[in-house]
Length: 150
Image 1 (cartoon, helix red, strand yellow):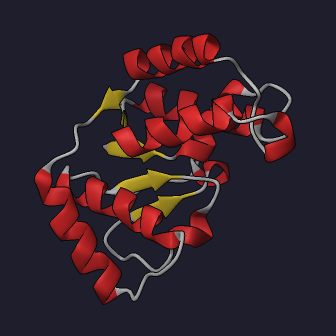
Image 2 (cartoon, helix red, strand yellow; image 1 turned 45 degrees about the vertical axis):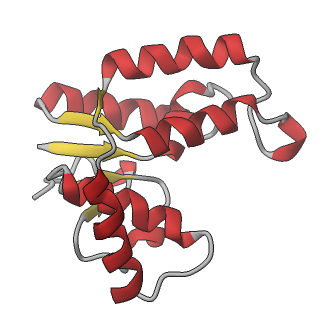
C-alpha cells in the first residue's frame, strides 16, 4: 500500500528529544516491515526543511542548512519522492471548493490533492484531525499503525 508520510512524522522521527520520537520511529518501521511504500511529495520536504532550519525559539529544530541537507537526502533515499504534476492544482482547486477550505488548511488540501493524483490512499500524520474532512484519503495516526489499514 502507498502511504503519504506527513511532515510532522518526519520532524518527530529526526528529533530524539521529541516525546513522540519513538512513536514515529516505530510506526515507520512497522509499515516498512509490512512492505508498504512510504511516500513524500515536494511540499512535505519543503515544510520539513523549514522546520529543521527554523530557530528553536520559533518552534523549529535550529539545525544548519548542511545538517538539514544531510537529513533530507537520507529521507529522499529512504522514501519514494513522488513528483509534483500540473494535475495537482486542478484537484486541489476542486477540493478546497468542495470542502470549503480556507486559511492554513489549504496546505493540507494540497497534500490530499497530491495523494489523490498519485493514487496514494493513506496519509500517516500526528495531525489526523486536520484531514478528517477529506473523504478522499484514509488518515492514520501513528498510534493506530498496528491496526489494519484498509
